[in-house]
Length: 133
Image (cartoon, rainbow, N blue to C red):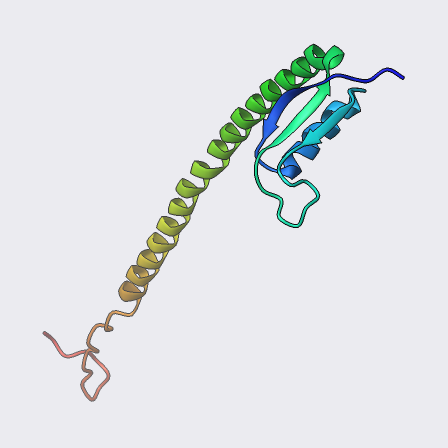
């Protein structure tokens, strides 16, 4: 039986990240092994090494590099999307507030003009004709 020589390809900060990395490499047919960090112990802490067979080392590095490049572009796209969503909302909110305030001021002005005191009534003499001046 031939024994595989395992070499480290990456060191990850926690067990979850190491398992995700191992699953990614495993999906491309690369045999992996995890070492360190108290993987199955009650206190998982410390760095975890992801090991691959020596024959698959170059392929594993290429896959990890491609994933890193893709994630860098995803981060840039998410930042651009956030910039398009975020600042666009603030001016819209300002316009809405400004429109409401302007509408209230205009409404108050129109109401004050409409509710002015009526002109004084002219007095009539007993015959029904208006008195001069």
